[in-house]
Every structure is written in C-alpha cells, then in structure tokens.
Image (cartoon, rainbow, N blue to C red):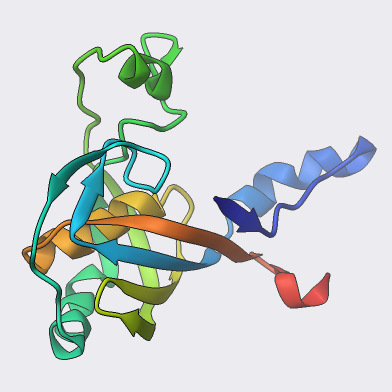
Length: 165
C-alpha cells in the first residue's frame, strides 16, 4: 500500500543514514471516511463504521489543530518494540496493549483534493516518528467520523525527493 522515496545507503555511505532519518518527510495520503480498521489502513479488518462524511469546510477547519507540535499514539500495528517484540506481532496475536502518546511535529498539512464523499487526499510535511495512519485516524475522529488510509506515498526524505529519481 505504501510507496515512494526510500533512501538506501551502501558501504561508507551507511554512516550518513542516521542523519537522513532525522530529516522531515513529505507524504501524500488518502483517507477513506466512514470506516476504521484494526490497522488504520485498507489492509486491516473494518472494526467500526460511521455514516458521517465531513464537508470540505469542516476538514479545512480541523486541519489547523494538527499543525505544529502534536501528540499522537502510534498504531498497534507498528514496528515499535514492547518487551522485545514488535507491536504488530502482539496485535496479530490479539494481545491487549496500548502505545504511549509521542510528540511529533506537523510542519504543513493540506487538503489536496476531495475525490468523492468517501475519499479525500492530503499532503503532509512532518517530523521523524510521525505515523500517517494515526494522523488519518485522528483527523477522522476530530471530524466525528471514522477513517483509515487507503493510499500512502512518501514524496521526500530531507533533500531526497521523488521528482529527482
């Protein structure tokens, strides 16, 4: 489901990877309104539904509360380790746990396009550690509906941009 820029380093260049990982990232993503899934993306089972579909004016108003430094809870299906095990493995086993909130920075968040009543496309520039699936779910929650990511593309990492490939 995810695609886009992924800088890869070989040999001596691997010494620079940690510096690249600290840089901001830019993503394009699509939210499907009205359904939340266990994974916060289209690969998970639908766990909740809502008949509410936000209007453009409501979406634009809500986005302001997601810029700057925000706190977000990473998705259960993530690579974060809990007692030495990846949380997605625990989630697949239906083991109950909850991640702590983490502070991230959203430098820019825009609504690119409303595709139809059920789908909207966004673009975000964010700090390291930002989970776009959590951001999408949080935006939907703010709009009193449910939502999950159906498309995710990383457009840049620091100075590495998709247009340069």
